[in-house]
Image (cartoon, rainbow, N blue to C red; front, side, top):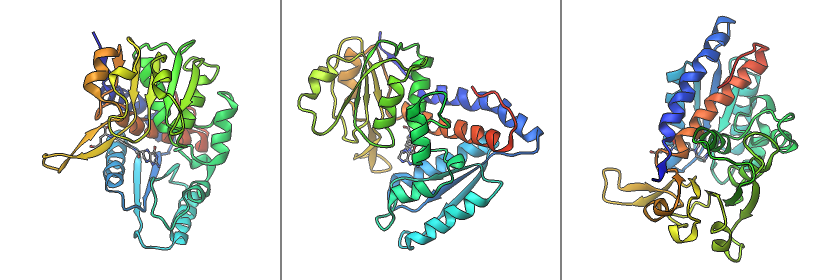
Amino acid sequence: MTEVIDGNAVAAEIREDLSDAISTLEQAGTVPGLATVLMSDDPASETYVSMKQRDCEEVGINGIHVELDNDAPADELYETIADLNADDEVHGILVQSPLVEQVNEREAFRAVAPEKDVDCFHPENVGRMVAGPSHARFKPCTPHGILKLLDHYDVETEGAEAVVVGRSNIVGKPMANLLAQNDATGNATVTVCHSRTEDLEAHTKNADIVVAAVGVPEFIDGTMLKEGATVIDVGINRVDAETEKGYKLVGDVEFASAREVADTITPVPGGVGPMTRAMLLWNTVKAASEQTGVDVDLP
Ligand SMILES: Nc1nc2c(c(=O)[nH]1)N[C@@H](CN(C=O)c1ccc(C(=O)N[C@@H](CCC(=O)O)C(=O)O)cc1)CN2
């Protein structure tokens, strides 16, 4: 029978397991601090940032939230980031993406001090991650969360044919790189597919693991998958529906047909999303440990 991955449950376990590390830091006089910065007109971003702040409260991380006017000049964002870089109580900084159009997102991510870059978007941290496990400082939250899910559900990556659909800097590129790395959660043979891929189905049909991160609702269906595949759906698309909110969430995968074929599959919501948030807490605790020199055991 198809196993439906419970991202909420695994994320709750990670939050619970982080509590020992957070206590160790507190006993040494440090409360880990995470700053979230929102400068966006994207309605979903507000939801994500408030969920992240709630998670901080739950585990005992000091959450600091900064919200900037959508029509403020880009310099206001850079000044905010500079202040947070200099604040000893802030160990992690997250600038929510997407940003308003007057800000160059790449420049904004580059402005975050690399040791506080819990998103792993700064080029120094991207380079360190690509250089391999012994060089990496952080892993980006969504791919890191996916690796944790695969491990939790005993999905073998070594020798697996993995297809990553989407080549974004936030998910596709780091996911492909991490799956190919020579370590316990890697060693897969990875193909990256994107909008110019000619015969997508030929690739996905051959894959033991499909990671869908295209941002198009129900782009991949069961007919495009191999029997017994593991399907990881990163898409969280709001589509109009007659619900209280006026929309429902659907993934990049058509769940009903995909679950008929897959061995293991993530739902939307309740799959990858909660893991993205859990790994942000994880990276924040790691950042606090490294900045203070207090050793902690991370789950
Ligand atoms: N600075 C960053 N910006 C963005 C990132 C990121 O990792 N860093 N990733 C995505 C969105 N994202 C994080 O911010 C994110 C998306 C979804 C969820 C989540 O918990 N989803 C829930 C449903 C939530 C809802 O009801 O809408 C779920 O899937 O169950 C968390 C974080 C883009 N930006």
